[in-house]
Image (cartoon, rainbow, N blue to C red; front, side):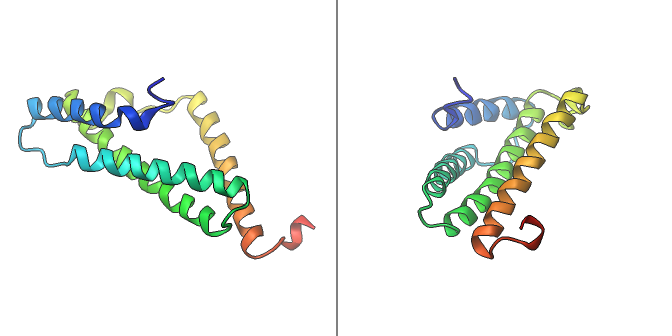
Length: 133
């Protein structure tokens, strides 16, 4: 349920990361509340733009906004992961740094979805490319 409703749990999760990292490295500089708030706001923006796009409201602008929000969310989560690793005493994340065949499968699925989404935005903005006709 926390994954489905992450915007409601992000602040408490990032605060837990902060408590753990302060135990290991009291001088570590980061803003758990600021990053959590950024994640929540961008997640809401991304969801709203996704729904608007599905109803063809504001396209292609809402698509572009969603595509911009998505990687920023990734950056925020990457920073939180670094802090979580430090808090767990594994700053390099070496205990979980191997990719399995299942990881490669899901990476391929994700790349395919991104390619289709980007093609959709291109078609909306420019028109149907020759190779699709």
